[in-house]
Length: 114
Ligand code: HEM
Image (cartoon, rainbow, N blue to C red; front, top):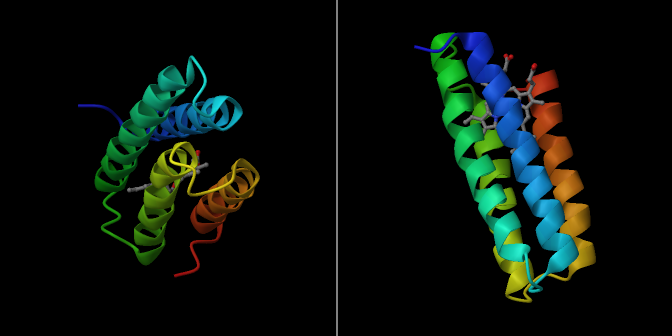
């Protein structure tokens, strides 16, 4: 079994993959190569969720409310590239939402407000 610290490292690597993938999708839209970034985004989503829950389990944290709220951020960031590629959201709006939602998720883990 992996240690708590390894789960946390994997969680952050998953976060990095997700944002790298999102950046590529926002830059390329429907152009060639965007699929690769969609895949990176998907892998990041999966890794960060599994490793985040793995860490919480290892650290015997249960399911605090800030973590449920982070899962909400995760769902929103998961939906963004699809909404951009389908033309539902303009790229500039998705760019701002990415920073806002990502920032909110980091704030939630720092402040653990609830
Ligand atoms: C949505 C985007 C997310 C971002 C940007 C994000 C980012 C981060 C960051 C930067 C840390 C701090 C790592 C450290 O202290 O070294 C962290 C910790 C953590 N995250 Fe996330 N995370 C996200 C989603 C999630 C999700 C979906 C879950 C769980 C299902 C989760 C569970 C955790 C846990 C349990 C910790 C450790 C908290 C602690 O040290 O007390 N995160 N996250």
